[in-house]
Image 1 (tube, rainbow, N blue to C red):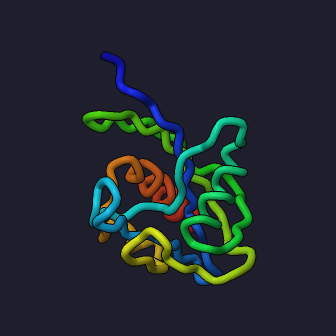
Image 2 (cartoon, helix red, strand yellow):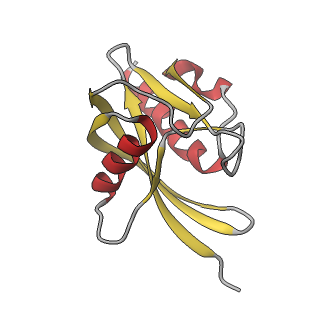
Length: 136
């Protein structure tokens, strides 16, 4: 039996201190208690960027400006495949409010690996760290 693949987008939101917003999955979500970049499924007819803006509005109640593509990674979970595309973005307007996540925090890039990440997000975390070390 072929596993279903879902296409998902997520925002690595940077602030002016070069920290990234990380969100903790709540007990009501799959993979509870793991950290992720916020985002969600791409709906039919949406571009990844449109989906990301909509998802961030729904989950965090704010507007973002989507910038560069960071990483796309296919992660195979037991029952489903997740094709996750992560984009660098910045807060454009509004204030972050947590509608679905248990917790959210701005994390210095150097401390990203101290968090327990959802498996699909790890590839993007590694790319961000690699990019940061090249720019240091």
